[in-house]
Image 1 (cartoon, rainbow, N blue to C red):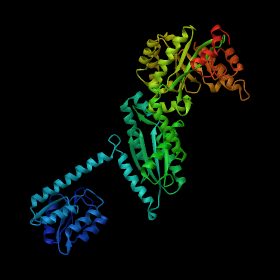
Image 2 (image 1 turned 30 degrees about the horizontal axis):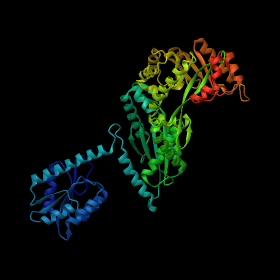
Image 3 (image 1 turned 180 degrees about the vertical axis):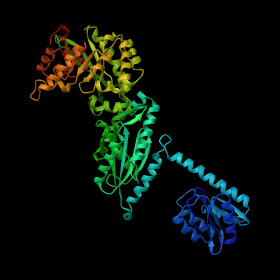
Image 4 (image 1 turned 90 degrees about the horizontal axis):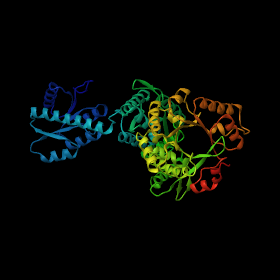
Length: 573
């Protein structure tokens, strides 16, 4: 009974000097369903513990030339199982030994002479308590949905790995890979949270499949995952990270269909970037954020300058949360011109931010932050309300005046969007047909069914609908016929080169084809990015309906807009 054999039975390590009592203990425990290893001296038990594991230790404190409490403390220290039960056998009249034993790490005691049925019950309940504690610990340190380790577990492992960085005898390098799913919230909103959970479980399964031996994977929360990878050379992480990246963006079977995702992945290296667990995690997340900001579907290594940029972005995000309440957001309006007679047709509303320290910020400076944090919903509603009020004022002067508003992706995914538009129209008393709502082509194609449903609800209000940045996405003639849209806006990238030294015949042919297609579908065509008279004349000759660009005016405040174009009210340019 000295060496355990592989078994599903609980194993008990017995340390007792009296051989006969030890044999009796072994026999009783064996017939009660336990595997037993019997040792007469604590040193033998200590040697055993160095090579084997056990489920419970039964230790006699009355061993000649050995202080049982010291043996208890030593066994507790050597054990790789911090919750292992240690039951000590003590003389009934020696309460001091009992106190000392508990101080040394014992979890229970039983007095001698041994009461065999009581001993059996004590062991049974001790093992049950450990099992319950282990289950609770697993629940505490593992994610319930994916059964992957959670953040607490991961940080604990990272702390162990970073500790090795300071030991010259255990010199090592490792990498932290942090990633999340691009536009994961859209998956929940369009397919449902259950489908989102299925996707997360599928990602966890794939991570287990592709993880190398020794890699540590965990789910930090929502769609955020983390991987800990030991490396032996910096160039090795390039190969490892690329392998993870390629595997994770392969198709997933979700709701019976093949679904493709993209991820943003950030990488931090230890000890190069830091030797602290939390700092390394922050560095990897910073690199991940940079990858996402660059458009997603890519991986980025952390660099030192990212910290300063991340700090600046964090401050900007905090300031933006107060911008609406403090009246710091301002609308600017870029004129839209009727291509047939060059009369003012309307304007597109664009938001700027008069920052108290940084001055005037363009939409490119803060709208991506608003999109990522969800603040764009409140900002978008504010733009909608204010632009409708201004349009109602200008409509009194120019009856055919139209106001264009670009809807953000988050705003478009809000189920109450039609209600918000109806409220804005009612509050401003604006005729619905004077309001042009624009969504980008790429946004329209994410979920055609959702797009069609929302556009139909908006169309029922009487507003005009437009596909923005046309030519840069994946829409087809069939979808244009399906969507209840009134116009398309040719992306500026196709317009700006017309009539310049960099122009190609292909540019003009693309624009001509888009206009011809739109005209065949009886859709109005708006060209943005018009910077020269040549471009304006070319577009008009091809049948474009509305022109927009710096040639006619940059985005302006209300006062500047009215000052710059009063003659347009008389039909002159």
